[in-house]
Image 1 (cartoon, rainbow, N blue to C red):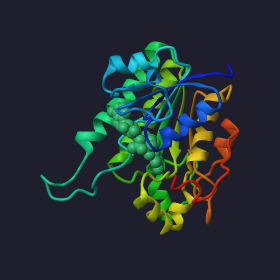
Image 2: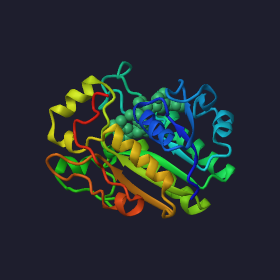
Image 3: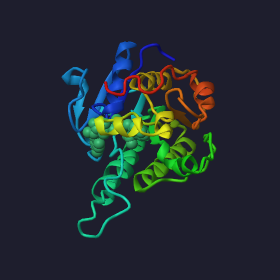
Image 4: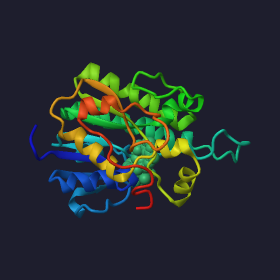
Length: 261
Ligand SMILES: NC(=O)c1ccc[n+]([C@@H]2O[C@H](COP(=O)([O-])OP(=O)(O)OC[C@H]3O[C@@H](n4cnc5c(N)ncnc54)[C@H](O)[C@@H]3O)[C@@H](O)[C@H]2O)c1
């Protein structure tokens, strides 16, 4: 594997995207960001502003890269279980379908048609939420999906999509069930109040190093599901063995390092 990689990061202006971009740039990789807003930490010519469903923009951004780290998404349900229509606050049709179903499809299609050999897909621990709630832990990559709400359903689709493109088109795909990297002070407060949430906390530093490892590791399996969290505080909820075996990555930090950053 070349030491300097050309990497496209979608969702590069977001919470995890900024952490991934910062770590990749610090390691000397050539990073292009793709987001509906400008990406901090990248020069204007490498910060593409566009939406995933704009196929031409997506393909232009992906042309010539060695790997795609696909993070762009609507990162949660708005209000679920639903209230009373029509003011039920549901974001499935308005956001989750275009951003989390059609978006990943366009990313995998760009990878297939442009011959990009490696794609990393951001899934979530919410796909195995049922196991966590029932204490059926630690969850492993083999734990079958027990999704929380509709957002998690879109990530079950994302994992299946990655598996199909890996098998049918020979793209190395990792689907990463990410822990919780809080996006605002309200989320930090929620984590502070729960042992479960502290155990699945993911610091920006550990997230950045994780994504750097996904592009720097020489040989990947054709498809794998991995977990990424920081080190647990109370109980081991996610089995990180495969992340170490596949990527040589282990978390270094523990809640609340970087939570407020
Ligand atoms: N932060 C967490 O705790 C967490 C946990 C599990 C999984 N994830 C997943 O990790 C990824 C990143 O999450 P985050 O917390 O950084 O979210 P975020 O909302 O901070 O960042 C997502 C970014 O994607 C961009 N985006 C959304 N739709 C887009 C589109 N159609 N085209 C282009 N850009 C678009 C947004 O502008 C935003 O900058 C998401 O896929 C999310 O589902 C996050």
